[in-house]
Image (cartoon, rainbow, N blue to C red; front, side, top):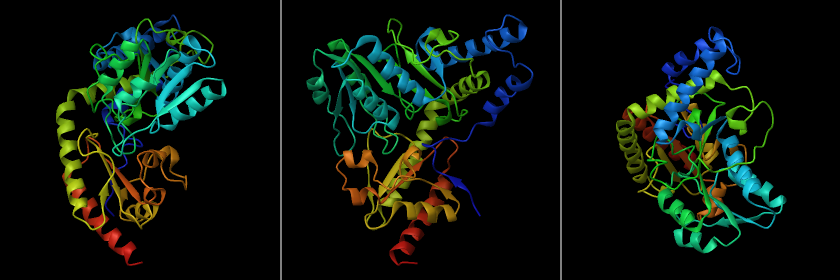
Amino acid sequence: MRSVYFDNSATTMMDSRVLEAMMPFFREQYGNPSSLHFLGDGAAIAIRDSRRTISKALNCLPTEVYFTSSGTESDNIALQGAALAYGKPGDRIITTSIEHSAILATADRLRELGFDIHILPVDREGFVDPEELERSINHRTVLVSVMAANNVVGSMQDVPYLAAICQEKGVLFHTDAVQGFTKMDLDMQKMGIDMLSISGHKFHGPKGIGALYVRNGVKLKPLFYGGGQEGNLRPATENVPGIVGMGKAVELAMEGREEDIRRMTSIRDHIIDGAMQMDGIALNGPRERRLCNNVHLRFPGISGKDVVFALSDMGLATSTASACTAESVEPSHVLTAMGIPPEEALSVLRVSLSRFSTMDEADYFLDSFSQVLKGLREGK
């Protein structure tokens, strides 16, 4: 049976060159980077080199990049760290209704601590209204967090504009760029972003490694205490193989970035055009300002999970929404926030590409998807 992986928003296949770069740090160069001997020096140099690679991709200083265990941890450190460093109970934190659970659950925790959590609505395509953001910022607002690109429907926010509003108001701005990093322009010297979260396994790096950009001068309260690694912001013995792998994945992603985006956009549009020719299919999210690798389809009357299972039997790996909520029987909060009726929000499919995806795979998906829809509608 043919195997096609179209669930790259959940995780990506590790590039073989990334694994090759990581391997020496499991057995030959396994020193603790805090140790004073030659093996410790080798590990510390490897971390330094990866930090420089990531800072170059973000156009920031190496000292502004902190390694974490994941995008989720980066989000937690950004939100809780800023709230506890700059705010107090009663102060406002602003985010949106379509954020990843790492943001929304952290916001719920801050609400329990007495913070005023203000949730911005989005329109039918998943976009924040900048004027609504501006109206929501009051004299007690500490932080705004708006994701760069949505993990479900691929909406790409106007991050520079939103960040500029916050900068003018003297409010910190954080963006969860886990999905958008390497697929959209994110320049820390040109944008008024104070904090940004990324995760290695979303761009062909290893799982269990993330990073947080923190603009110099922004002070965060650490969530953990220990040996002082990562500038005391994330104290723990560093995951050297993961850091090396993440750095290599960033290097590879940036080398062919423009061509990769062009190819993925072409395949994405081919799938959208083909699907929209089928009866009863609608596109969730925007046609423009959409992640190059995201397709999200709606087909009322048919269970999205049934479609995922049927496609899986044909060797196609897809999803309905975030892998973090895959077991939920509730509709995606992203889709309901966009105004899609709950019953229709359960009749959806997410197709997410990578730089290794091909047009031939897209054709196989379209043929298989058409067969699955026909079979489910006929009750076969």
